[in-house]
Length: 277
Image 1 (spheres, rainbow, N blue to C red):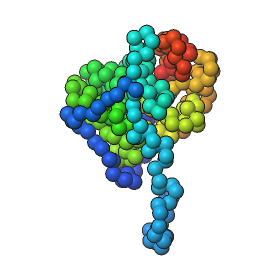
Image 2: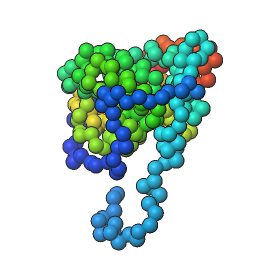
Image 3: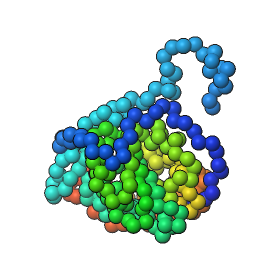
């Protein structure tokens, strides 16, 4: 787990555009199928025309947001989630999701306040484990895919804890959250390109926001996998990722492990354990 230190205060920022969807314990049904800023004067002088390139939503975001989420049975009577033909999550990962949730809900959560942010819903495994912890007082979930968002909203309707599900990518949403507004954060999103799939590629850009959003003493945990062996994974985390976390503003970084054997035929994971940052 990663513990936050006091983060310098800054004025809350407004998101570049409104969040398109927000579901709070909604009963709305969704069908599921098994398949530096420039100065104002310079801005005013800019000619009217198409949006600048940096303002356009990445094509990968648009595709992922609207893609069909396929929930399907896998060999060994397991369940998987696929989006755009990619294996997003399989339920044999449950021991890892539980370990991440347990780390996120460590002893300090009760001390700093039990408001938990979860980025990425997937099969809802970590969400269920978070919801089971007594120290969780409020649960906020961010999910980018529309169909998975609908399933998350239905799940939230039956959750033990007050749960809010927000649709969109974290890059669109978290700027609206005040500084030091969460006691814990669990991050697990699917990488959308090769760079994001390498080491801390998908979570690295979130480090500074995590440090800003956490209360002093709060905990940040996230999915991590790197290298072709367990040794490579641990070495990459300690050599490459730990310095980034410290530079982002965290005061202490620890790691642990949990045994988690993939199902026969799994194509995206072949170690016998996961690292718990």
